[in-house]
Image (tube, one colour):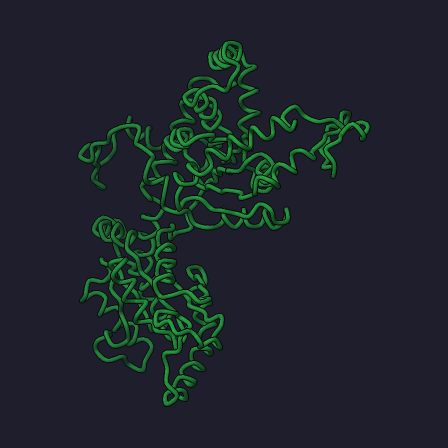
Length: 485
């Protein structure tokens, strides 16, 4: 059992981790390192001190490259994004002086234009360049790096029957310009693979599929709200789903695959109830007196004690069976280490009910089986758990249905919705894809509160000053077993 000193030490590490995520420190240092590599200053420390404000602005600024075929009206989409995102569109016509035939001069002209117009501070959108891999590499070498690269792909080019002027599938060309367009399209097709290779780590491919310009623009805007850096991250996964949705099976898979701690709320509540500690005694008193689940303020204490353990802070965790209500969700998200991945397994109630009613377990081995009939008496050696009785299943599903709408509404864009009816392997792959995907800027940045009010004027140190011994020990004290990465 952890001593009080050990628990406090783990709590400090949790605060450091949450602080780094909340204030986007990883992203800030990514921008600083990028500036250092590009500029290669003689005095790196002075350069970092002088360019820190620039790194902060670059971290929060959108820089988008739009790749699209020649017959796509990129100007109309760029105008919509310019208005909604507040960034500046830049085309070849804006590059002054006139674009040179030399790739190196072209990149210098682009950089000069961005600096003169101060687009590095306000954000930019390139709509018709870079046109080749050589131009892309030249821009990368001088530090013109995008945060997002969006490629527009035609999915049904042959369908030109739409009469809607706002439809992306409507033809915007005339017969007299078809030959010129074919030449531009051939050039585009020759260079697009090189551009994909140059921007592979930032590329997102969007299929048009009959979308309007406004719909496509809103989809791009949604992508820009997601985290733009792949930073070191300890997974803290919240799986939302009713009984029978497969949440626990997915959680066990993630626990084995990534070494996460699987926390099932029902099991955790039962184990805490058996402990001879104040919280366990309180749970037993509530059960004996009321015979119902404890309230939200008690439930969050049970969960918090587990999440703040050294094992969960070090390895990460995956939580199932909780939260039950929106209040639970709010309390969970106000903890020092809230979930940074929220995944909802969408399974219809009829399927969940069938899965639960057909579930049996071997009385000797404890193995689980699914039978085609709910008449378990005809199968010797198999039993049914009390929670899988029809009346209990219907009650649990009904209670879940009352709260799931409000839970998803509170989670907003932070939640990743997955079809849980698909094959087991497919569901696991989609969940893993959600872990690999950058975090959506939502709950973590909006509702996590600082545990202390920090005065920005306090504890400011000059780089040339030496730290006091007491302060130095505080900064450099580490735990050899704990790592933020």
